[in-house]
Image (cartoon, chains in turn brown, blue):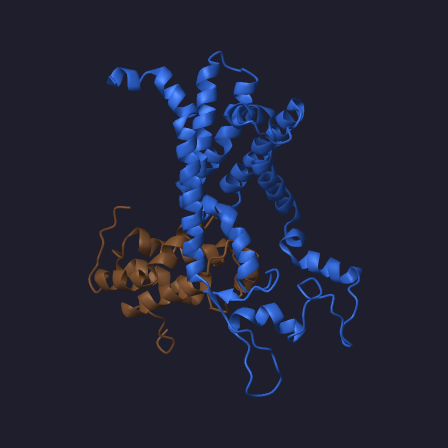
Length: 128
Length: 258
């Protein structure tokens, strides 16, 4: 809570510009999400990881794009690093996730990936 | 009009029972229309292509899971199923059982039952309760069929129990707790408030009936106004998505996608 933000290397204006491109859809999705967790069983990564709640599509969506929206893009590298794990390690964008309310979760996670990549935060498989 | 009069109890009581009802319904209807239009604007019709073996033909991503197993044939429970061709078989009991088992009702039967009962009664009880119908009759001369008072009393209790189950889920189930924020508790309380206050007012649990009934009316109005602008909009979106967005669980000729 009291960690000092180190926003060096993070361009918040660029993040906001990318978020603005899908502003309507993102705001609608974040507002309509009922936090019901009914999307969970549709994700095979959730089912394959012993139903770990951190693999739920809604969790991934709310803790990546949701955080970026709430903080208006004012995030630091550490937060982007956490988002990187969410949107790359815990999702393969197979688009199987089903939301009963109609939220396009894969598109939102792809947006999260785009934002992370724009700030130079992405998995470097050859180095990791 | 003096401020002391505006903030007087009589004025507030008359305002909540009168103009505020109209304001809340207008905001509800206009808000829902606005949100539905915004949602439909974001959806676009996608071309449906058949899945064919071999090179050169693709199936659109959105309809792949919708049609993949059927290879382009019409599902027996979808529109046009009754047109039997030489390769169509009659649906039998096993198809229904499999369909049910893999649906959310088969995977989570208890929660499906609770949410279904809750949502049916959430709309059904306010529409068919005697008190509301008497008010409608006095105001417009029309009313719906009314439930006996002991039945609506029991059903209100059922709704409150369902809401308690949802609260329990939010507090104790990891998969729900991890995505729960303060707004979830606020909206659940907002959904519960009309039923709790209505129950207390009807049974005259507290001596100040006027206060309780005002809270009942106010909480109902707040809930109505909140529907288009909060997650309550899922009451409309759920239906639109099922009939429009192509996917594994869509109905009819759902072909749209984002």
